[in-house]
Length: 341
Image 1 (cartoon, rainbow, N blue to C red):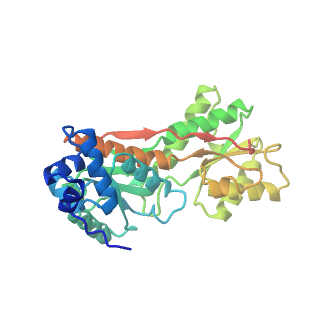
Image 2 (cartoon, rainbow, N blue to C red):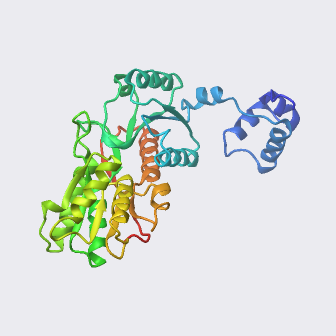
Image 3 (cartoon, rainbow, N blue to C red):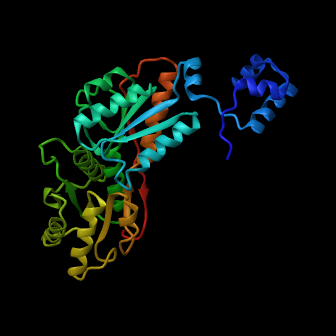
């Protein structure tokens, strides 16, 4: 295949016009006749010309690049939808997404930011696999930054996160509509191993309580358990709920992995889902939710929508040369109904 080394001068000679006219066509200038524009476009196609990215950057002073720092997203199948959402938002606005996976290594994150700054990206999206507070390297403060599925403790940067309260509320409201009034809850631990908060645990519990209150049902602390998310814990917590004097007829699981343990315990006890005990969950990890039998009803985490919103918000303000207001945007978690309730 012939190497593409055509220049603007080559296009001008091929089209029989001046280089200024070629430049105007390349930049979408309105003052070029349609006949001349078509001659230039035909010459560009014939010669296989591709504009110089660096030259475009020098001319427009924009790189059309957005950086995406993935703390642990790029290696997580269901959370990778965040990258897809960010990619689609970039593509729709003629930008390119540069993704760097940094893990939890702060030195690696700082080096990644330096790489992105060297590429003169217009802004950065920092994303985490699960909703949590994060700490950013100091050099990230030199460029517009939006956080996806995470936030900084002082809330000084714009972020987009799932509406955990709405998700918990809607899950319980759905169970109530199905006729359940005794609803157990195997919630996530309220704290990480390092002692940090788990917003999903707090928010989903708040939604659970609000839905019960709105239905006039008193909160019963015996119906709420917290799991360390091991299969054994999820199994035994389900057994504890069913051993109560007035056991639940439905169980709300803090995530789909918890629901797997719940399913196992119910099967071992000879109980049918949803005829004897209904199950509803959170996250909607498709390989789990669709793979269980019966398929699991679950609140979907809006990873795609968060990635897309983060880039749209970033570009809207960068292109307007505005400061980025530190909004804390909530995205609704939709219910995906299957056969478990």
